[in-house]
Image (cartoon, rainbow over all chains, first blue to last red; front, side, top):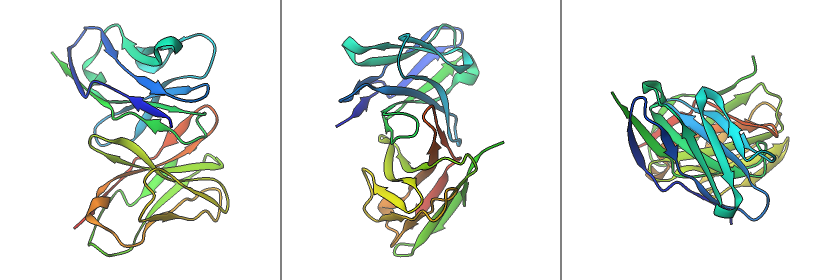
Length: 113
Length: 110
């Protein structure tokens, strides 16, 4: 069965600092991996996705993620966070955007001035 | 612009009542999904559909049903609402490249 683990429930970083959110997955075939962001009271917005090819993928809002098959990981990074990045971040795995997704439990990001 | 909408955005109901949450998309996607979001669980799949007249159970389908009579709509019905179904419900539709989410419906069952 497929699963996603986000080991950090809550992370606090200072504005301007770098960020890394961890995601580990278990999937029986070639994984399609996604990172979504959810602002308070809002729906989910796609940050980036990995389907194949270059293992370092770029997304919106200055985010990037690196797929490491050997570690079953797809960690999200940003070199310098902004106060507007405060939100909940979800990692998900599936067989494509048109297939059912399995989500992690999310990481809540707090930004301090 | 194409979009996916949900109604109502907020709903309070009583235990035992039947409740239907609406989901409408104008992306013309064949594939649609219902998830529920609960603290500590992330999003979990309730039901999904790959096209008209097709419905499938997800991870947490007990107490829920869906029907798909056209491409645009996938209503979610709670046959007899229970307090354990208090949650935020998200509808989504997907192309190969991306799954788009609605704004969510916050349901409270008293």
